[in-house]
Every structure is written in structure tokens, then in C-alpha cells.
Image 1 (cartoon, helix red, strand yellow):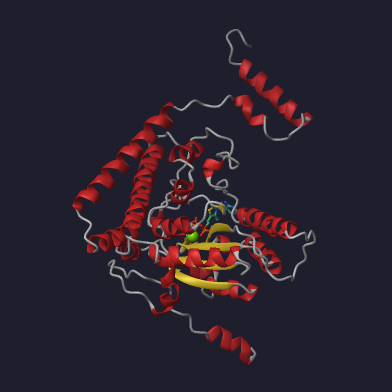
Image 2: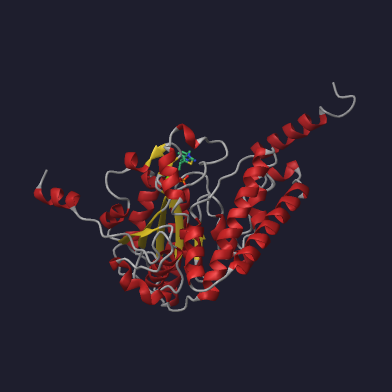
Length: 392
Ligand SMILES: Cc1ncc(C[n+]2csc(CCOP(=O)(O)OP(=O)(O)O)c2C)c(N)n1
Ligand SMILES: [Mg+2]
């Protein structure tokens, strides 16, 4: 090993950026100081809304887990424990930005205007993909992606188009790797997990992002597990260091601190929009629940680890901070009641939502008629008519 390589491995990692400590006291880390200005617009009214987003998402999440257990959803993917980074990052976006989720970003969906009902419909098999991303009400929130890392390619594709559009506005139609970043006025944020950071897609999209200086923010929610595989098995260095190797600014934040997520998200997005190129945020958090309702984490996780992270619950942390600002019981009780009622409404609505016509699954595969699709459609017709009375 050369001396340089040894030095790189010995590198001391800066403390993760944090404003609120684990018990909700405002106690910024030394690394947070340079981001404090980003919080100027954030006061008690904003924090109350963030808290509402978090509690509403958890109530919805819990309701969906019950619905799956009762056989009403095919699958559910809980986000419990990860609401802190999700709320801060979602709130740091501007309306014109694009957002590419993985499959656990229910809170981000809500903030961008995709309803919980729309999210739940996907897990009941009532839609063929999700929501209409081109509908302005949906805040450029793209579709959930179960193929790990595919969304990073989609995000870099959109971010490349943001560069090209900006260049065209300046009368420059050529786009080459290695050119300086341009001011685009809009950015793209992509969410993925610690396990997904090992996928080729995620790494390739970062190469393109760095080469073409896309206005992009890569967000890795490091919840410590990729189903049953711990993050230590995927990477011998902290994940944020990988981005440094691609030539991107990259930081680690306390992912259960909404203020840190907001401040860093806002800074990185603004830099991306104004010609500063891509950035990478590793949010250190924890998946409190199961990977999905098909998983039993007690088979591979220690209960002490879970208990340790339950004590760092992002909702409890923000609640403590709000209480220290003088917010009283009435508010917290009202939010809980409203959130439970909202979750119940989604439950009632999903149970009565109409099923799509089976034939509609063929409608959007190709834009033109296609013989293979016609063949499959004919097979389905024959199959369905075999149930009709008098059929052989
Ligand atoms: C390309 C691909 N490989 C494997 C899977 C199966 N799979 C689904 S989720 C998952 C773990 C993902 O872990 P991570 O990226 O840390 O995200 P998390 O679920 O923890 O949010 C795996 C292996 C998949 N969906 N897609
Ligand atoms: Mg993970």
C-alpha cells in the first residue's frame, strides 16, 4: 500500500452535522456552524408543520401495516424512524425541483403533493405505476422505484436535461463532459439507501453527474440495513467518502435531526441550481420497523440496537424542541388526533377504491398496437370467459 492510500484510509471523519442533540436540545455540532444561516426562515410555525408531517406519516404508516396484515394491501414498506431526514429534505426543496424517491419516502410524497391515498393505492395494486408525474399538483415527485438504484439513472437523466435546457436558453446547444457547471435555476434530488449505494446504477449516475456537473443532490438514507445485510458489510468506509472520490462535495448529517437535513439540503440544492454542481448527503438514520411487511428483523438484528435507536426517535426529538419553545400539550394532542383521523380516512377510501379494468394493464406498454400485447390480451379474454357459466 502506498503512503497516500494509507493516509486516505486513516482520514478522520468530521462529526456528522447536527443542530438538535438526541434529547432535542439545540446544540449545534462544530460542523453545523457554517449551515446555521440556512435556518433563518425557520421558526416555530414552520417547525409545527414539520412535526405535523412527521406524525401524519407515522399514523399513515402504522395504518398501512395493519391493512397489509389484514390482507388489504399486497405489501407495505414502513418508513418509521426515517421521518427526520425526510421532512427536512422535503421542506428544503423548491417547487421547480424534481424528486426521485426509492420506495420509502412517504413523507416526501406528502410534502410534494402526492396524497397518502395515492401511495397506498400502489400497494393495493390499484394502479399500474403510481401517479401522474406531469400533474403540477404532484410537485415533480417521480414514481416509486423498486429496482434498486434505477431511480438514480432517471434522476441524472433529468438533471442532464436541466443542464441542456439552461444552455439552450443561453443559445448554446452543445453539451460536453468536463465543462463547468451552469446556472439552471432548478435542481434534482434523488433518494436511495445504503445498500443501493453498492449498485452499479448508483455509481454510474454519479460519474455522469460529476462529469456533466448536473444540478443534483444525491441523498443516501443510511438506515444501517439493506434487508438483513448491515452497512458495514457493504462498505469499509463511511458512504459519504465514496462521493468524494467522484469529485463531489459530500457530508454526513445526523439523519434524525430535521434541522440538519433542512439546512444542508437547502444549501446543496441552492448550490446545484446556481452552477455549483452535484452534491451528496449521507443521512445517518435507522429503520425502526421491518424492511417490509414480508420481513422479520428479529431474525438478524439485536434488540439492544433497536432500543438505542428508538431513544433517538426523530419525532420525540422535534417534540422536545418544540416543548422547549413553549408549545404545549394542546398542539401535540390536536396533531395526533388529526393524523389518526387522516389515516383512518385513507383506510376507508382505499377499501372502497375501484379496481382498474384488467384490460387496462395492456394500455400503456407501447404507444402503438403491438402483436405480443394483442396476443396476451386475447389470452386474458379467453381465460376470463372460461369462468362464464356454460364454459367447458
Ligand atoms: C436491483 C435489485 N436488486 C435486489 C433487490 C431486492 N431488494 C429490495 S430492497 C433491498 C435492500 C435495499 O437496501 P437499501 O438500499 O439500504 O434501502 P432500504 O430498504 O434500507 O431503505 C434489496 C436487496 C431489488 N429490489 N432490486
Ligand atoms: Mg438501508
